Image 1 (tube, rainbow, N blue to C red):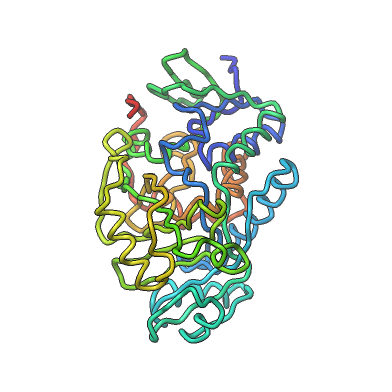
Image 2: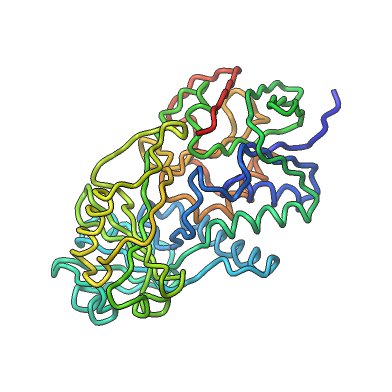
Length: 395
C-alpha cells in the first residue's frame, strides 16, 4: 500500500517541532500534526524561557546529549537568525550533600566540564542579590543559561517547512493504528498514512499512550514574574544567573535573569513544588490564585529579598512525570515503526534540539549513536496494546 508520507509527527511542541526539522532536512516526506497552532500556551513549552545547563545533577549519562544539544541550538540560531540562547551562567545551590549540588559536581567531574564550587560568602560576593543560608554551597557553571522556548519552536517549524515539511494545525488526532505495513492516523480532518510515526504528545501522553500502561502523571506548574522593588537593572543577564536552590526535599525554587525589559519582571517558579497538583490538559486550573503567588513570594523573600515585589504576570503549564523522573524515549514495544518521546518530567526542554535528531535516527534507522538505555519504555514493563485510541477534548 502506497503511503502519502514517510513519517508523521504527532505533537509539534518542543520535541515534535525539532523532530520535524531533522526529518525534513534529511529529505523525507514528513507531516506534522498539532491540535493547536504552535507555539501555544496549552502544553508544556510556553512561558518564554527554560533553563539549559551541562553539569547535570539528574545524572552524568545526560551530558553527551547536552553537549550535542548546545551544538544544535547554535546551528538553529545561525540558520534562523533568531537569538535562542542566553548563556548567562548558572548556580546549582543547596547543602553539600544535596542532589542538586552533589549531582552537578559529579557530572562536571565525570565529563571535565568547567565549574566552580562556591560557599555562601562567595555566592553573596558574586551575586549580592542573593541571601543564602550559611550552610549553602553552589556549583557555578559558566555555560549554563536559558533557551527562549517559544522562539525555538517557531524556529524549528520554520526550518522544517523550508526543508519541505508539511504541517497541519488545529487538528485533533482521534486514533492512530500501526501494523508492519505502515501507520494510519485518523483525525477530524481526515486520515493520513505513513511508513513511520513519531508520537511526542507532551501532557496528553497518558491518553495518547494509554495502551502501554506507562505510569505517567501530569502535574500543574505555575510560572511567576515578580517586579523587584528597585527595578530589574540588577537582574539582567551578566548581573544575575539562572539558578536552582534545593532548600529541602520538598521546596526547590528556580529562576532566571530578567529578559523582558524594565517592567517585565523576573521569572521564578518551583522546580519541585511543596505540594503536588495532578491534572490533565482538560482539567488543569489555568487561573493562578493570590494565595499561590503569596506562597511563591515568601519563598523568594528567603533567598532574594529584593525580588519579592509585586506580581507582574503568572501562567500555568504542565510537567509530564515518570516515577523515576527520567524520560521515555524509544520505539513502541509492539510496533517497530512507532517512536515515542514523553515523560520529560520538568527538565526536558533543553534537550529538544538533540531529541529531534535522536527521534529522526530512531524512525529512519531504528537506532541512534546515543545511549538511550536510561530512557527505555521497557523499564516500566509495559503491556503492549495495538489499539492506541486517543479521543481528546480541548480545554
